[in-house]
Amino acid sequence: MKKYLHVANIGLQNTLVYRVNFFFRAAFGLIPLMATIFIWRAVYAGKTDAGDVAGYSLAEMISYYLIVTVVNTLTAVTEDDWQIAADIKDGNISQFLLKPIDYLAYRLVLFLSGRLTYTVVAIFPVALFIFFQRDFFVAPASGEHALVFAISLVLTALLQFFISYTLALLAFWVLEVSTFIFIAFAIEYAASGQLYPLDILPPLVTKLMFFTPFPYLMFFPVNVYLGKTNGSELWAGLGIQAFWVVMAYAMARAIWARGIKHYSAVGG
Image 1: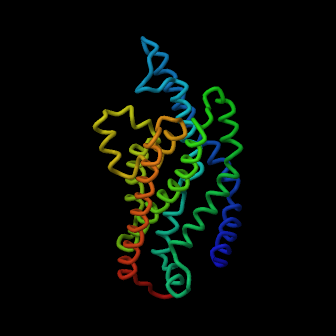
Image 2 (image 1 turned 30 degrees about the vertical axis):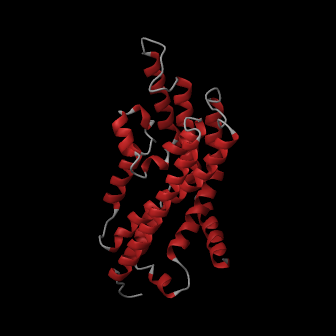
Image 3 (image 1 turned 180 degrees about the vertical axis):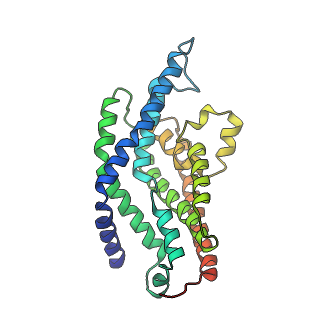
């Protein structure tokens, strides 16, 4: 355990070097959110009736995107996949094959320490933006919803990491993984509920998406917070999310095991 605490300490020190970069990334990252909110306001203003859109009032729709911002700040993978791919291409993982340290655990600790640093730095601009939108920002629907949301955030972060880690391991076979990462990001952005609430889509499409892990990266935790998932569906959804985390972890381990057999490093 001491070695991983040491890794966490190094990760915190390294990421603090980029604290100004994190601040501006968080601040300017709010610009697309502002544009999205203005678009939805125009959509609701242009409606001939005073009805909702797919069961969302304007206030609920804006609240949805505000919670998406919070979840994304706490759980998103930033540059971990690129760093893992670079470790493989540059032969840096050779040292982990010779030392009593697990590479997946090492990267997970760095990811968590990086998220902690990013959250601390980004909390000011995000909190300031939410303050100006405070009329739409709501508290969790209940204590039970708050508890499930907190657990779901942890599972979301793990699922994000294991998926990115697995994609980065493709560097064992291909020289450039950026294409795969960009494709996966585009699919995730659309299918996770980050771009729009999934239940505004045709019911069949939404149902099919729930056979994938993507809704559990964003849509499920946000809906839990907003109280749109209730009763037994809360814990059932949490169980399914945990299932996808286990599956993603198993996939990461399996790809690593196959990749190491294929790996070769020259020089040093």
